[in-house]
Length: 258
Image 1 (cartoon, rainbow, N blue to C red):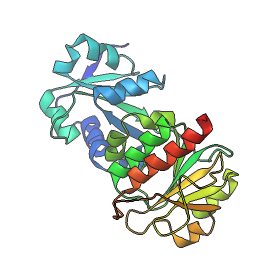
Image 2 (image 1 turned 90 degrees about the horizontal axis):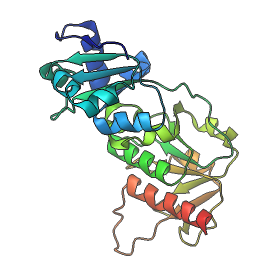
Image 3 (image 1 turned 30 degrees about the vertical axis):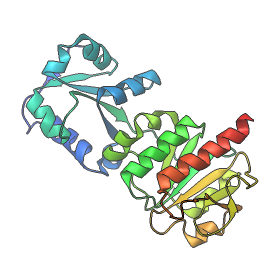
């Protein structure tokens, strides 16, 4: 690792660019890089053997051997004062270390593999939770229909807790882009369809999860081979989309393991 560079002014062009990446939900698309803040995310990237383009570390964190060693994974390192890192981060409790990760260039969905399709799911926390479930339960890719929260936006990345690095992620798709998946589409619905535990789930398949309030779009439902619902004996439709996703993906994984 080369000796780190040091910046101390918030007017520095690098500091301004980092601030945009950390705060703007769409800056990653324009800049082609993702801001990964915190030891957990940085270690998750390294654990997957994926390269970090740049490490940004506070002067205090640089004095800690474990964080200095983690920062050495990046091709380039910049140290900054703690106050400047707070300005860049925008979080109430900045972590002291972050990586810049080059945005993966995948633009073509894989065919024939277990997939999750997000149809206009807008809450960043929900999207991140769904990515975690998909990665944990063996789904290879997550595809986002236009209108879904940015898969690499800062809040989604934080909510994903490293799941991003185990998945093929493609966003900005249209319904017609799902034709080449070559697996049946299975939609979740609170209004009809077979109950989950009784449904004949195809494997592999693509689970389609819809907008928090509107559900899966009618035109997309028409493309689905199967609709399923999760019984809720409590009498309330209280499951949000992230909870429903975890249940459905687990059921798919459970059946494969039998």
